[in-house]
Image (cartoon, rainbow over all chains, first blue to last red; front, side, top):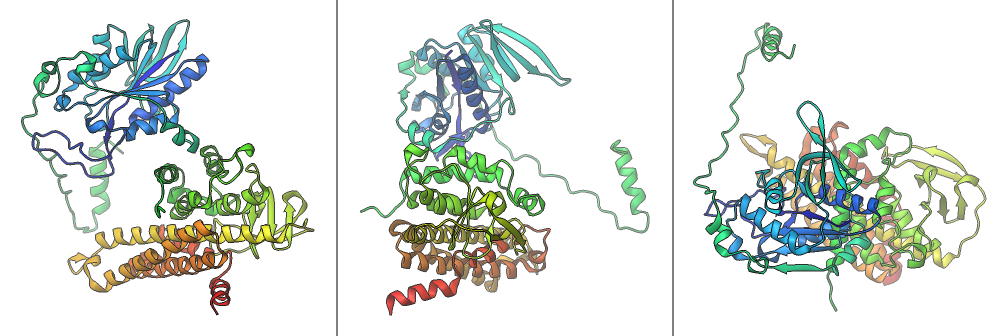
Length: 259
Length: 300
């Protein structure tokens, strides 16, 4: 069984991010594997392992031929990667991204299942997996907290507010997984050394047959018109304790229905 | 000749750092102070799976046939998070000595840390199998680093091999001291940026800055000696490294304590976990006196 995993390489969340003048996130520095994607990579490795054959292919779209995050996932055990890097893709919205990923999955060929995170840790649109499914004409199962392959079908437990739904679909399909679906492994030293020699297929939008007018700023149907700071947290109300402090705390907690 | 670490060596270090930041947090180390073994359950297996423990073992024995230069940055990381594991004792000392990576080794010149959880114990007297010795627990300043007196009849071990293993452990311990110094310095820099007095962060006071600068200088002078000793494995280089790394760690511990003020003295605050490890390691694998005399004998 061959599994493709959509992985995003994002600016290190530990470093304060900055915005470019066009309101997009500055991605010029070193990018790392989005932690939410490490669950998909681990899930893919386990599914391929359980199937007894096949390989894991990574699909990523990133500026400046960035491969740092891909190397991490390759070190975990993925076999190869397709990296789409093209200045024409700057400004791509979620749908343009989905077009690029869908074309890349077609390029990978012979893919039985695509895994993706529920949403990226820097964009949070959460719409790309369903869009990729639609573009490919494949079923899209989202918010999966458990994934298994049986009888040529993919069966997932789809997280809901109350619990989970059991959903299944025929293959090929795309599945988005939640954090915690599996515990991602740490890459071993042998994996790190091997990752350097694993193939990364670097392609442009044109290589995928995408016209420049369909992607990037030109193809974007979303426009970021302004960015504002999130409102600062309001200062709490201060009481001087005149002997009735405990009662005030209890009244406050009652109001919150905590007690 | 290139006097810098390779991309692989940096990548190994980063991988270990990421693992330890998740699996060896201050909360984990704190718990090890009071649990049954002083170690962090499951951490050894994760380090083994990653390839850390067997780095220096021959490939045929499941190792990676790497060198002390590859290992030194990783041991620095284990120091940075005060990993309560016999990693210097096993990866640097025991694995090349026994030429196998599947046995946990405990070793020391006097009281042996984590001897109760090891498979093999090696002292200057020789080699002991764990199940053939009597262990007597002794108090340690570092609650996670359990110390034992070892009683039993040792099997002889080649003296030259022990000496070489000791020097590797000296370098490894020095690397851990650098990591500890870095951690304590980082904690203190963060703290002095947040703690305010007279309306400003205390880190803006020159007297506080001087402490931190002195610690940084000591660390920056120690590190190259540690890296050189890892490359040459010369006993005198190892002694220089250990002496200066101990000095850096002890000086940083003192500066950190001073700059933290009263909170630094409390066991509820994390600083003591790193400070006490640095005190313990300064007396482990040869103290300052031993290493000064080894350097002295070589140059006089």
